[in-house]
Image 1 (cartoon, one colour):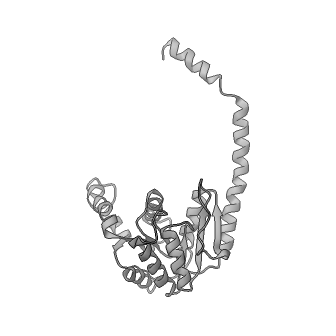
Image 2: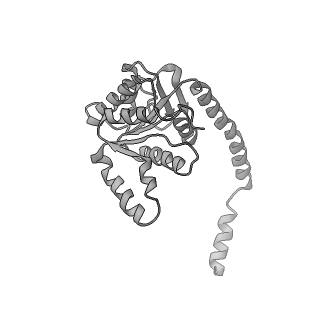
Image 3: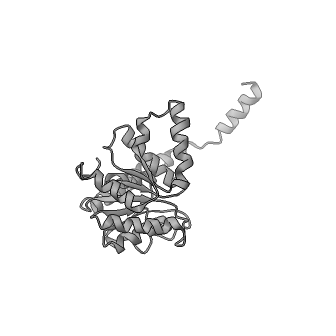
Length: 239
């Protein structure tokens, strides 16, 4: 670093007010209590909910979208088998899944998140099982802890985040294995091919890792995968 750069760095460093760090520290400490509160509310409301399946997908899907209709059908069939449905509580695929849960006379859970321009949870979430979060990470814990499976419809970054979160936890044995199902071969096929070729060829995942999820186009098959799994395994919270 030459003298000119050194002087510029020193000048810019002096602009930082030490008291701003004190204020930030205080806010961080108080945020811990907000985080604890979100976990406590989630655990309290969902502790006795019973077996559920978390369903994910795009908030942008409209009711005329084939995957919207498929998500509603899948959720209805799942609840008819005795499972509840957990979603992010928003529009699109989440709304379809919550609606299907109600039509199947099952529990319909909505784990909302405070975001700009969002309108709150959809109308098909049971009021007893509506929870709103400020923190994505606290919300993600609830998706996993009380779910006996993940059904993942076409979606964006958030949907991918939930999908890979489940695979990572199962791969690293932080939780026991449970069914993770991608619905939509046309949509997910390119990603699955990339995982099976590029990732395996580069040694970043193993052949076994590819068996941690399944791909289908059929609601009946998704339901069957979950039901078959729990004929062989115990239903219980994941951690």
